[in-house]
Amino acid sequence: MTGVLAIGRHAGPFLPQPTHVVHVDVDVATDRVALHDLLVEQLAMQGPLLVVYPSHLDPRMAHALATLRAAMGQRPLLWHATDLPPLAADVLVTLAGALHGPLGGAAGVAGVIGLLERQLLHWTWLPSVAKVERPAPSLWQHAQSSLPSSSWLISSWPEPSIARAGTVDLEVPRPGQPVALAVADDGGDRSWVGTLAGRLPGVHTVEVE
Image (cartoon, rainbow, N blue to C red):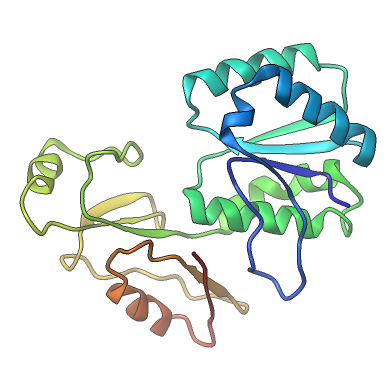
């Protein structure tokens, strides 16, 4: 049993034990009636719920969520909007689901999920910056992105940044405890991931679709 419901995201194989998180497809989340019924059903089964959803929403989903939050104001629902990209968001909801029991329920998880989010570092390789919104690419980067064979690396650490792949040295913090590296190549260039893993001593790497 879990009190974590994730819109558009899934729990993944990032922990030794399986972690259950209720997944809600984006199409369902844009249907106010279907989402309302699902939330009522989950509240009856599991009690208080923490709903995790992407902060950058399709306008239809944003409207549906805003309406539901107003309509269900007296229900034991907690909401968390995450800025994390897809793979990091999957890690976040997996950790939230795993902590539901140890922290005594959705309220306990809601109290720490912001800290968990800040501790998740992410790097993304992209062939273009055309659809990147955060961090916002410069006009020069947009122009360079239109050239053949361009590639870009987006990093969250030490601050959100974007640079041409191969022109910047990967900055990696020195972890004070064991860390894991989740990798999903999605058909992209993952050659730089070996450099990243090599700078994290004892890192455990998990590859996912």
